[in-house]
Amino acid sequence: METTAIRIRETGGAEKLLRETVSLPPPAAGEVLVKVAAAGVNFIDIYHRTGLYPLPLPATLGLEGAGVVAEVGEGVAAVKPGDRVGFCAAGLGGYAEYKIAAAERLTPLPEDISFEQAAALLLKGMTAEYLIRRLYPVRAGETVLLHAAAGGVGLIACQWLKQLGATVIGTAGSVEKGELARAHGCDYVILYGEEDVAARVREITGGAGVAVAYDSVGAATFEATLNSLAPRGMFVSFGNASGAVPPFEPGLLAAKGSLFFTRPTLMTYCASAEEIRGSADALFFAVRGGLKINVGKTMPLSEAAEAHRLLESRQTTGATVLLP
Ligand SMILES: NC(=O)c1ccc[n+]([C@@H]2O[C@H](COP(=O)([O-])OP(=O)(O)OC[C@H]3O[C@@H](n4cnc5c(N)ncnc54)[C@H](OP(=O)(O)O)[C@@H]3O)[C@@H](O)[C@H]2O)c1
Image (cartoon, rainbow, N blue to C red):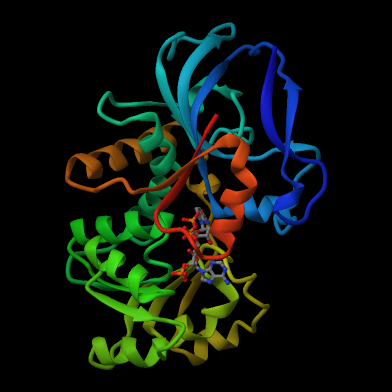
């Protein structure tokens, strides 16, 4: 069958996103054809487009979305045609009308979560899940630093950290974004374009620093994050919105107080079907516990390039969702 898809043939700016017609094979054994109803836009799509994370080309972008099972391959029992499903750890191809995925990597959607909400929630929410529950299980009473708190991952993580009983220090690029982060549970907001982040963190924590810092901004915040941690603190470097963190000497971690540094990915924390299911269950539980899903903007799939421009120029808050 044929599907409309947003693809890249070469890496570069948003203008490299092309709307093309692509043929899809029928789903193989264990696979499913999903009719995509909503596709999530994520910063990783920009890394794919620019080549920071290289892909074999041509490639249809998009890792997150939701829709209806249209057809199943041989041996698929977990889902059937007509079922509502979401995906975020099931390979590329989300920016399309149809996508093939391994059945065991799909997430059945609860009835009270719409396709648009699922496309705004799954990848960002399952990222928040592994970061704050498994990579570093945040405990009630701990103080946490979270950069880009008004972003897609940020607004979910703020709320979930509050549910866990943490004190959240969030950074944001503008007063308006800071207010939004506050409305989603941030206890303290630092405007990192104007304020000295590490000095403010020391002030807020009475000089102690934070036990864990979640940094998805990368190059621009590396030093401030390092200087915000308490001795034996955990530096979680999980993204590069401002550029990749430059190489550094391990001795720096010793000098700053026996710090831990990790560079995790969702794919290694949701490597198996069981981990995907466990992460999604925890996320849906948090939603039922009051976590609000913030669909910041919806746009037609054909406007994917504009969606990228808005995200990379820091003009979005929460999640952006594309509608095929
Ligand atoms: N490792 C993983 O498993 C994993 C999984 C999912 C996402 N991520 C990472 O998490 C981050 C958030 O992803 P997202 O899709 O939810 O994006 P997002 O947070 O909605 O957008 C990125 C935000 O980063 C901030 N930022 C700071 N400096 C920037 C710069 N120079 N250029 C662009 N943005 C800048 C902006 O917020 P302000 O204007 O407030 O500064 C911007 O809104 C990304 O770095 C992404 O790669 C990692």
